[in-house]
Image (cartoon, rainbow, N blue to C red; front, top):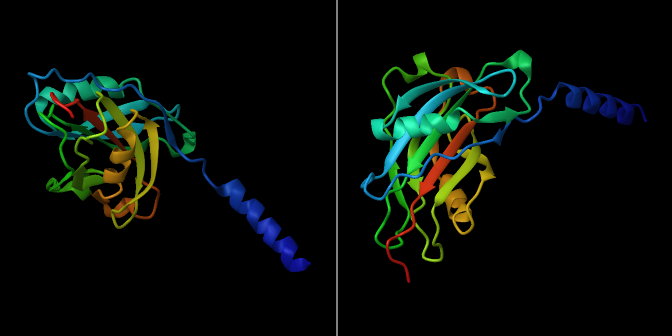
Length: 210
């Protein structure tokens, strides 16, 4: 009986101490590039700071082609996160925009590596994608749009808890499957706490499909 009561007390303390999960609650999607604007895959990475009210109060560019940076930054302006403990703010998070060029035909997934910037751990607290899986464009799909996912990189850089924030029918499932195989570098000071990464995959439907 005493053991059961003690377990109940410990469970209550644990629940009181647990922080609410931080989740992207409002997310604007970036404007789609025109077909003539993009011929190659583009990756833009930001480290953002989440304020006490859940708004994005800082968006430091880590890497990205200039023609995609501003369209990404405009989308970030309207983002808002729920579940933020004001006492913990500001909270760092990484945001990765993956812009896919319009393919001629549906194409297969592709894996590629991103080089970790020099001195990353000294200057940043958010996770950086080192292995990216481009989901390709499924034969069964025929749509434009952006799929927004929230993931929790582990201390070892693997992906856990993929959450679909904003989906596109027929594109969300292959995007989730690809992102589960991404790998991140997590700075040493951040390995003992939950990490937040948002991945925005922007699709253009193929010129031709069967």
